[in-house]
Amino acid sequence: MTISTRLQRLSALFFLVFLCTLPVAAETRDTGQAGLLPAPRASYTAETLVTYAGDSLEMKTLHRGSWERQEFTVDERLQVTILRPDRNRAYMMFLESSQLFEMPYAEAALLPPIGELRTFEVRKLSDAEIEGETVGHFQAVRRPTGEGAEEREPVVLDLWVTADGIVMKAEGEILVDGFREPLQIERRNIRRQDLDPGLFEPSISLPQ
Picture 1 (cartoon, rainbow, N blue to C red):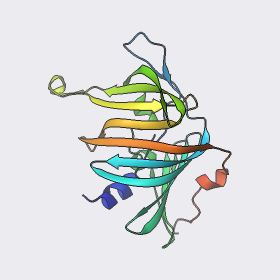
Picture 2 (cartoon, helix red, strand yellow):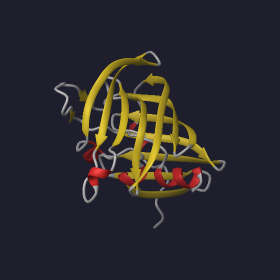
Picture 3 (tube, rainbow, N blue to C red):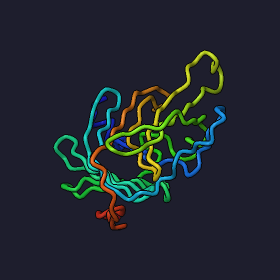
C-alpha cells in the first residue's frame, strides 16, 4: 500500500489525534498517580510531521479545541481534511478538482477515537520540554482481549501533551484493521491564536 493510499484513507494525522483529539478526562490507572490527559482547549496552528508505517508526510495543522484542519499535498494534489469529533464526521477535500468526501470520524483519524482512548490504561510518566513547551509524558496501553489474549503483546502509545491539550509528540503503535502499525507524530512552530470557526467547515458542497 502506497503512502498516498494510506494517508488518503486515514487522513494522515491526529491527530493525530489526536492526528489529535484526546478524551476530556482519561484517568490514570494502575499507577497511583492522579495525572490526567489534558483536554484539547488550545486554538493554534502548527507544522506537523507524521511518520506512519515507514512513510512520512509533512502538513500544516490548525486546531480549535477538538476541531482540526490538516493541509498537505499527496501526489501533487492539495488535500484538506477537517476532523469534527463533535459531529463524528470528517471531511476530505481535493481543492483543485472541487471534490468533497464525508466519512465517520474514526475512519479519518490515525489515533484511536475518544471513546476508545478512555478504555486504555493511561499513566503519566514524567514532565518534559519539547520545542520550548512544557509537556506531560503519558503512556496509553491497550491490552489484548479475546481468545489468545495472554499470548499477544499490548499496544503501547506514548503521548507528550501540553496543559492546554496540544499533542507535541506521539510515538508507538496503533491498530489498523487489527494489524499493528508504527506511528510517530511531531509538532513544531506552535502559534496560539484565535481561528475562524469557518476554517473547520467544508468549503465544497457534497454532490446532490
